[in-house]
Length: 81
Image (cartoon, rainbow, N blue to C red):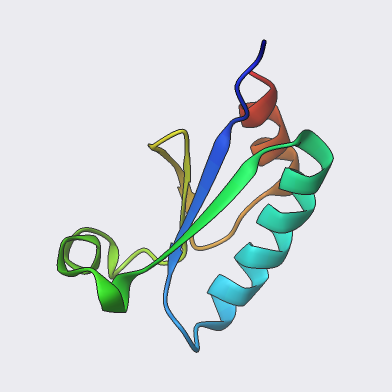
């Protein structure tokens, strides 16, 4: 049995790049069966310290995949690997 991949979107409310990333992540996750988790840097001091200059940040299975803009083809490839 294959375990679903997890895509984590780290962002904050009111972030237009986060909204764009959310749409891409949702579309790719729906097509690949990946699970999507969202984390808000305004609710987590460690995430804020680590990522505040890079949001939105996308992790695949806990490893940083990209930040700012999400390339759907690249994310699909990462999830297929």
